[in-house]
Amino acid sequence: MRPPSMLQILIIVLIIVVLFGAKRLPDVASSIGKSLKIFKKEVTELREDDTTPPSGPVSGGPTSPSTTPNPTTAPPSADDHGTTPPGGAGR
Image (tube, rainbow, N blue to C red; front, side, top):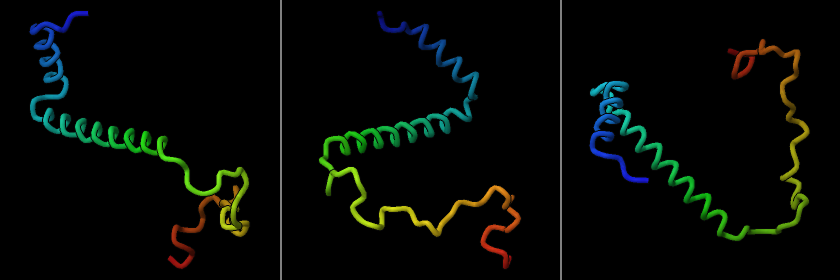
């Protein structure tokens, strides 16, 4: 496959300018750059996590009582319907 010609690149640039407008292009380019930077950082961290050996025991069961769920904390019931405002009843 050959590289795109100058005319094809010019047509693509014109289409982008028409779609986004000349005023929004710097904002769009900036947000795309930030997104790519974050994505690359996350991919690098995932690769580093894959190469580092896990620390601690590798057994399948819980190692301490703190890893078991707290039975006193229950999810809201279906009949609650959100009648209590956030932060408690005193608001």
